[in-house]
Image 1: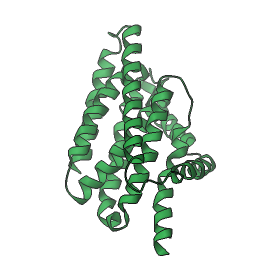
Image 2: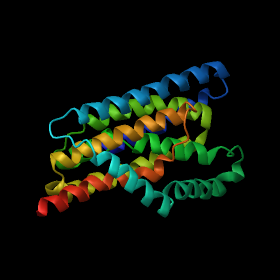
Image 3: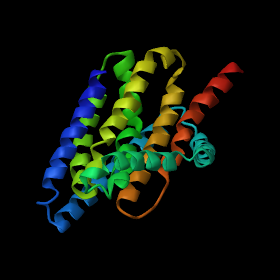
Image 4: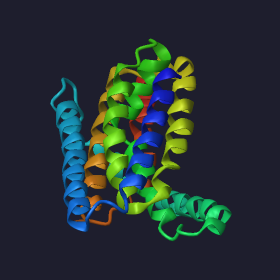
Length: 234
C-alpha cells in the first residue's frame, strides 16, 4: 500500500498548495497552467494508448467494442451521475463552512483524472504483486502537479479526490495478489489502450473541447478481461 499512500499524500499536498494559491493566482496564470496541464494529461493518454496499440498482439477492434459496451453499461448504471451525487452529498455535509459551490465539479473531475488510466491500474498491480512502487511514485508527482492547478481553479473538491485514489488504488492493490494469475499480458495491454483513450478524453474535457462522460466509460476496462477469459476457455 506504500505507493497508494504516497499518491494520496501527493494529492492532498498538491490540493492544499492549489487552495493557498487560489487567491494569489491571476486568472490568466490559472488559465495557462490549466491549459498546460490539460495538454500534459492528453499527452500521457495518447502516448500510453499508442504504446500499447503498437505492442505485439494488440487487438485492432477490441477497444472499440469495449468502449461501446462499457459506455452502454456505464450509462445504464449511471456511474458519472453517482459520482456527482457523492460529491453533492459530501458538499451538503460540509456546506456549513461556506465556499463549497464548486465542490462536485472539482471532486468528480479530479477523481477521474487521478483514478483512470494505465498508471493507476499498472501501478497498483505492480505494487500489490511485486512490491514495486515506482509507477505509483511517478504518478504521484504528476497528480501533485495536476491537483495544484485543479484546486486553484475548482476548489476544495479536488482535495477529496485523494480519498478516491486511496479507495480505488488501494482496492486494486489488495486484490492484485488474488487476481494476478488471471491478468495476462493481453488483458493489461488492452486495458492500457482503453485507459489511454479515457485519459485523452479527460484532457480534452479539461480544455473545454469536449464533454465526454468518461465516468460512464469505466466499465469498458472490464471488457478485455472478460474477452480473454472467455476466449481462453476455447
